[in-house]
Length: 115
Image 1 (tube, helix red, strand yellow):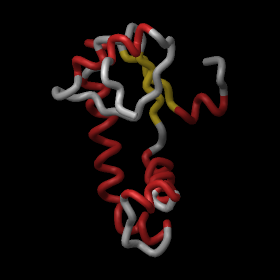
Image 2 (cartoon, helix red, strand yellow; image 1 turned 135 degrees about the vertical axis):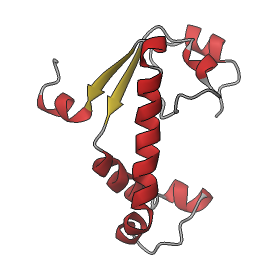
Image 3 (cartoon, helix red, strand yellow; image 1 turned 90 degrees about the horizontal axis):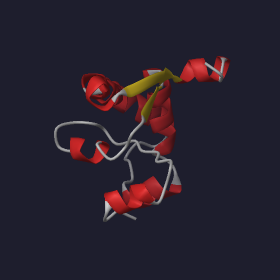
Image 4 (cartoon, rainbow, N blue to C red; image 1 turned 180 degrees about the vertical axis):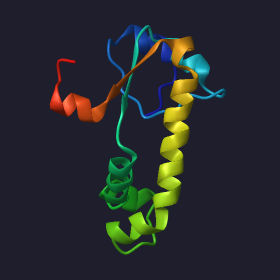
C-alpha cells in the first residue's frame, strides 16, 4: 500500500527499507530520515536477480514479460538493467553529502558483517 503521510509513518517506525531512487523529484522524502545506509550490490547480481524477479507470480500477474524464461529475459534486458544500476548508484553518490548517505558494499557484508 502507498504511504499517504510519510512524516507520520516515519514517526511510527525506526527502520525503513526502500528501493527508491534519489533524484530531484523526490529529495523531499529523504529529508525525513536521519540516517541512510545504501547497500551497493554488484550490477551483475542485480541483473540476474531481476531476471528471476520478472518470473515471480506477482510480476507475471501485473507486469508479465514476453520472454519465455529468465535467461532470455536477462539477455534481452541486460543493457537496461546495468544502465538502471548506474543511474541508481550514481544519484545516491550525487546526494551523498546532502543526506549523509553511508555506502556499504553487499559483498563486504557477506565476508565481514561487522565492518
